Length: 332
Image (cartoon, rainbow, N blue to C red; front, side, top):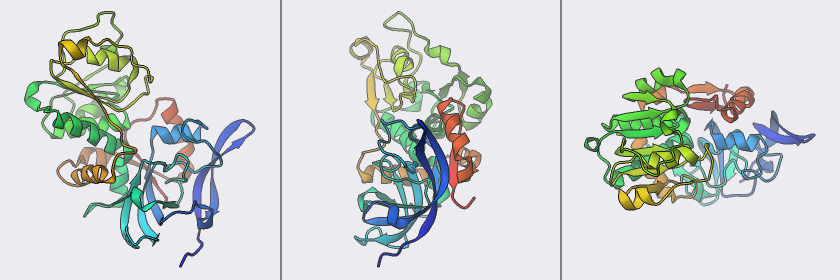
């Protein structure tokens, strides 16, 4: 039997040409018709949430809207029986928080095919410390490993290392025994990155545009979270046979490069998508983070906020002033 429940959500609406977010009271009857109703306890903050909250129509077409591309909580209703009522689930990616009301509300209603069972022993908050950013970092590292990346090959670079994806990648790669070089424009975060396991922290000038089509190899492999010109420069510095996992575009979506790194050094450019991939692929990475891929330093440094702090936190993302992991706790 379907019941109607009132709940709180941080909702964005257009006012006089501007997009303003505020806490509102909604009803589960306002949510889209779908198979699974979930009571959300925690969500995770992402750059895409900040874009949605700013009215970016490439992310969210219609307003009012509740952002939050990540959610963890308890199944309250299940039309299909799977996931079962009372079970804990993780929902990330697909259309959640984009055009389907997301995890910044205390309830979401989604297809059963979007729900991943919570790994044994994990809590909702822990899952949301990682969120889409952690999932993406895990997928990046997994692709490098599948291509044969190994610590003995040499240094591994992580660009945008201070960001939500980059910081998890730094700790995970370090945990797996790699010599990690963190590339970040935020030198005031150098100590934090070294604490996560980076052996060296260099500024973004390490990826300053050079006219030369090829540069001296500096890295065996890399995780790139920024795209644009820095990615083009990174490709010039990868050792023969090395790989770069690419997952971001904060430096721009355009990639102006030559074929030389690919045909002279056999460099591999690996695209990483964390949104529309099969549910089983997501479940595999979540289980690893709940086990041998655990990043205790990332977990210990995560910051919790309530809905009243979302506006400032999301604007910090857009200004490039955000770092580390931020978790939305609906109980705060």
